[in-house]
Picture 1 (spheres, helix red, strand yellow):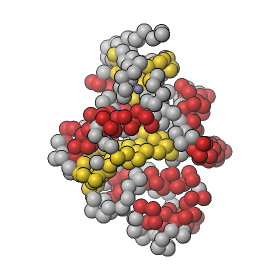
Picture 2 (cartoon, rainbow, N blue to C red):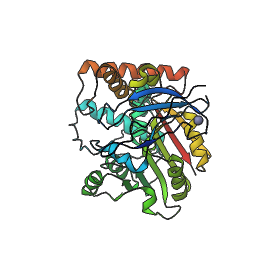
Picture 3 (cartoon, protein in one colour):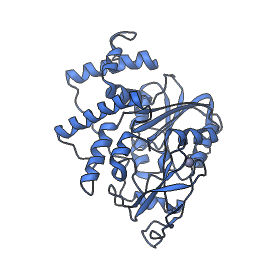
Picture 4 (cartoon, rainbow, N blue to C red):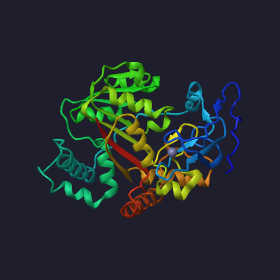
Length: 356
Ligand SMILES: [Zn+2]
C-alpha cells in the first residue's frame, strides 16, 4: 500500500496556515486513501495547497484534510469569508403569496406550526408541496426539521447574522445563538437577538438547558466534531433534539464534479461526512435515537457552484445567476430527486435529527 508522504508545504510563517499530517480517519481510525491532491481555495483565497483523503472503510466514507490545519491557525482560512450578508426581503407577488400559503399549510400539517398564512386546517393545500420535491426539501429545512414546540428553548450554533434565529423566533421558539464571528454577532444583536460570542464550550451552559440545538453547515468546520456533539448532548434536555445539516461526501454532485465539488471547500471543511461516519460520531457522543436522510435542498446551488468551479478558477456566491443557469440548477435538483429513489444517500446534504 502506498501512502502519500505528509506535506509540510503549508508550514510557513505569517499568513500561512500551519498544518500537520493526518493519515487516519477521525471517525473510525482506519487508514485513508488519497482522494485529491494540491487543491487551493477557489472561493475565499485562503493560503495553501491541500490534499484530501477518504476512509477506506465503506461503511464510514469520511473525507478529510491531510495535512490538517492546526486549530490555532484555522481562523486564517476565514480572512475574507462572510457569514453575515444582510439579505433584503423580496417583494411579495401574488404567486409568492399563494406559494407561501401552500408552504404554511404544509408546515401546519407535517410539523404542527400554526401559521397565520395557512388557508385550510389539515393537509389538503399543504399536500401540493409533494408535487414540488425541491420546494418541499427547502420548506422542511426552513423549520430545521423540528416539530413545533411553542416556548421551547432553541440554540442555533454558528448562527451567523441570525436569519434562521429570526425565523424560528417567529415560529414560537425562544431562540439564542452562538457564533465566533464578531461582525455576524453584532448584526444578530442589532436585530434584537440573544447571541453569544465564541464557542459553545466557552458559554458554559448548564446541563439540560435546551429543547433543540441546530447546526447548519457547522460540523464540517470543526476540529473535533465528537467533542462538539458531546457538549450538545450535555446541554440538551432529555427528549430534546439536535439537528445537524452538512454536505454529503457520497452525494451525486461529488461523484460528478470530484475535486471541483462545492462541498469540499478546502481548507475550511476539515471533515466531510457520509451517512455512516456521521452516525458513528453521533453514537460516540451519546446519541442513539438518530434519524438521518440525505436531501436535495441545496442541490441546484451546489451544482451551479460546482460547474462554475470546474470551468473557472472562482465562483462568486453573491452573484445572481442568469435564468438559464438557474433553470439548469433546478433540472439537476429534480434529477437528483429521481436518483434518491434509487440511492437514498445520493443527496447533496445530510440532515440528521438526533434525540437525547
Ligand atoms: Zn472511517
